[in-house]
Length: 424
Image 1 (spheres, rainbow, N blue to C red):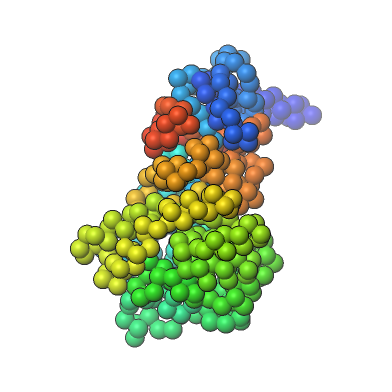
Image 2 (cartoon, rainbow, N blue to C red):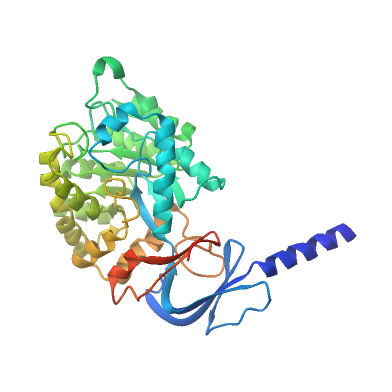
């Protein structure tokens, strides 16, 4: 009994000593979409204990006070489309041949840290070699610094399709890839590939429903999975508690992905008005990745940056994403913030906010797309995406009110994740 009493006292004392008080001149309430003034956030351990009116004085000598009366505080941001294993550069396609998995893993630690310090405390990694699963686990174990990671592991694609990472390689060396490496041709392959992703520890499934820009293949937008294959992938994914994200540029592939049951359409560049209406009917989210489109279009103008087969695709697809996004937003398609970081430099994710606002989305809605909407997609809406009591203490701060100057989101001056301060 005495030991139990002593333990309770120690726990109480420790909890009291760990409280952090954050005085917020302005606070973004992502649920209501309002900017609140003069609030105090109290953080205990990894959770938000309370959000109080006015500037509350810390109760104990061990409590920490952070004075942000001249700043705007908001929940940690979420990017629903990143690739933590790589970053675009002229040597990228050669790197895939010469680098070992250990090299990929070590580079990923740099990219993960850059992402977190930019204020993105949660990301959805939409495919790589599978090293991204180990990166997620290393972050969760506290071995390396990075955001909360939800990862697809490897892509699921068709032979020769976007996501078949053997494209452009010596076929005598790579052989005929199958479901274990995410390459499917038919219902049975599709079923096995999903189960393999589950076995490997993926959180979600990522498919490539159409051709893509950065794969070493000619077509950027043709459909590359049948409706039956996509439907089977979504069916098996549901059995294993996973959602499906679909890379898709061309309209026919987009239509098949929606009808097949995916949760999100990534990019959506050539989407028709009819497919936008179909998205609304099925509750499908659009993850637009405008930044990636602009980046590849610019890099394609630099001779030698991309293999020649990629250049015309980048010039044709990249400039069209922002206009498609504007149409989709006006039609009422659900939008989730996503950038395709890795196609451009990690840590520059907040560029997407500027492009979304340019296309007609109000700043507050753009912030909500990067907080509460992302949380909905990840099924963590009860713990992430808001600054409220009981939520995980993922908190960031910027110098100005983003609803008055969206550019301030590019300069995050404070980052707290799980109650731990990583940048101040």
